[in-house]
Length: 579
Ligand SMILES: *[C@@H]1O[C@H](CO)[C@@H](O)[C@H](O)[C@H]1NC(C)=O
Ligand SMILES: *[C@@H]1O[C@H](CO)[C@@H](O)[C@H](O)[C@H]1NC(C)=O
Ligand SMILES: *[C@@H]1O[C@H](CO)[C@@H](O)[C@H](O)[C@H]1NC(C)=O
Ligand SMILES: *[C@@H]1O[C@H](CO)[C@@H](O)[C@H](O)[C@H]1NC(C)=O
Ligand SMILES: *[C@@H]1O[C@H](CO)[C@@H](O)[C@H](O)[C@H]1NC(C)=O
Ligand SMILES: *[C@@H]1O[C@H](CO)[C@@H](O)[C@H](O)[C@H]1NC(C)=O
Ligand SMILES: *[C@@H]1O[C@H](CO)[C@@H](O)[C@H](O)[C@H]1NC(C)=O
Ligand SMILES: *[C@@H]1O[C@H](CO)[C@@H](O)[C@H](O)[C@H]1NC(C)=O
Ligand SMILES: CC(=O)N[C@H]1CO[C@H](CO)[C@@H](O)[C@@H]1O
View (cartoon, rainbow, N blue to C red):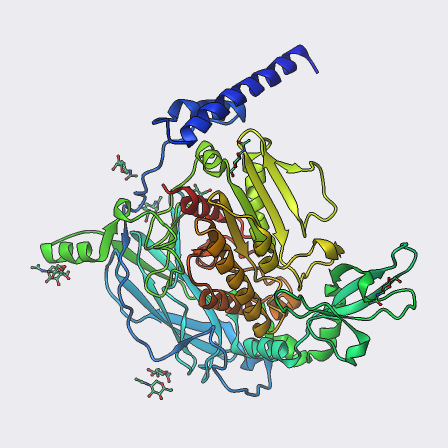
């Protein structure tokens, strides 16, 4: 280490200490301006100047929610929409190529906050209109040119009229040329296969348990699941005593091993896929086609010209200046129903229709999470946010112990920033864990139990998301899990009313191969989202990952790319620290 490096480190320590003491004082409210300090903070971690808080006037205002027209239909997340039916030929399936759509409320010029109403006609591979519903369509409106991009999902889900026609409703939230894009996520015949398959057996998928003798000389693997065939005496019952969540493995056969020797868990997707390949008919497989956009290209012009006073008052009555929106808090942003107006992206910034999120510059982010203990509990879609902070707040915020961890994906993974007193922890939800790598059973904790063990105070923040590993399981299993978590959240908030609890919903994902479409389909994920939204209540903030990923212009990914995570972070920090 050179003298220069030593001096630099010394300087960093000194600056850090000074900053820390100043910040302590400020943190306690004795300091009116922390402007100067922010620069020091920036220097310590070698970051650029804090940016000026952006004034959210990209579009200037948002469209106020209005009741939407009533259609006698239902959305595609509600099960039992259509009876079973027979089809003979692959051309009988709903085809994105032949399906089309048109505008119902045709106008020459649309104005901001006007509604755009589309009717989608599903057609089969012969171009004949479909006679029954159940197709899973998604639709968005987009503008993308060299200087600007914006996109929005439908207000609510696409409405299924039950006879092969569907309605997509939008609120027009920016001006210019707006294009509609309708995607056939699944033909109804695939939704039928996916549902039938999911409901056929309570325990789908293949999980393995490894039993290891105390001296390590004997090991044996058996199958595990939330329910298993066979005599109860042949099973190890690993049902969680606290939450009642069922989990079983076959008893090891070896005389030297018994149920208490259960040490490791993993999923075996390869075996699961092989098993299903045998029980899925070739006709079933034909339905599981990739997501496909309907080729219809439709563009409208949205103007904000105000010709006369009646138009002006109409606009004023339907819009609100962005800066007049309240900052998002738990109170005004529990579960936002996007039925009335969907949120939207404008130049990569996600706008919520009812409240305002603040965009946090790095120094603001750091001071927001200082003194906080953040618990990220759930699946890899919440670990994504944990990793985002590791990267953004590093190298100050470091994994402890540093270096790679063999069980990183299940956790517990902890990260600490000594200078800014930041503590973060990630832990995976318990079974089912769909990863193929072995995880130590002792590391696997149910979220409800983890919540019960947290000594929480006003500096504790709990961020929860789980859905992706449940799509291949029966719905009751997920409902039960979310309920045990909500009960634990209630106990936690009883102990510590000031603890912030944030739930992140599901998101759209890639459908790269047949098994993705069968097990991890967006239709199944949307059902998970539906369950999350109906089960979450009380003093819990909600991050609407679904609408954000639905709207985005880049390809769906289970770990959404682009600005998704950054915008989630801004939402979380807004809940934590206000604007
Ligand atoms: C945003 O608003 C600020 C202050 O109201 C104004 O100075 C600025 O020009 C606006 N920016 C845009 C892009 O409209
Ligand atoms: C809506 O649809 C249901 C079932 O198809 C039908 O019984 C009912 O009369 C319809 N209601 C209206 C208002 O059209
Ligand atoms: C489909 O159903 C809707 C609502 O019941 C009805 O208005 C429409 O005319 C029907 N379309 C066709 C093609 O049958
Ligand atoms: C891009 O779209 C925006 C918003 O509609 C519009 O104001 C702008 O003129 C467009 N730019 C180009 C280069 O087309
Ligand atoms: C399992 O085996 C261990 C070691 O042989 C023994 O101590 C323990 O009592 C056994 N447990 C049960 C439930 O049989
Ligand atoms: C104002 O504009 C609206 C919508 O274009 C139109 O229907 C109305 O007749 C206009 N009113 C006057 C007084 O020009
Ligand atoms: C706008 O709201 C005002 C006050 O509620 C009302 O008097 C006016 O008629 C509304 N204008 C339009 C065009 O809806
Ligand atoms: C770190 O923050 C916690 C609050 O979460 C506080 O109790 C603790 O005293 C702080 N530690 C130091 C070293 O200041
Ligand atoms: C509202 C908000 O925080 N938007 C952010 C979303 O992510 C983009 C890209 O990272 C940022 O530029 C926005 O500020």
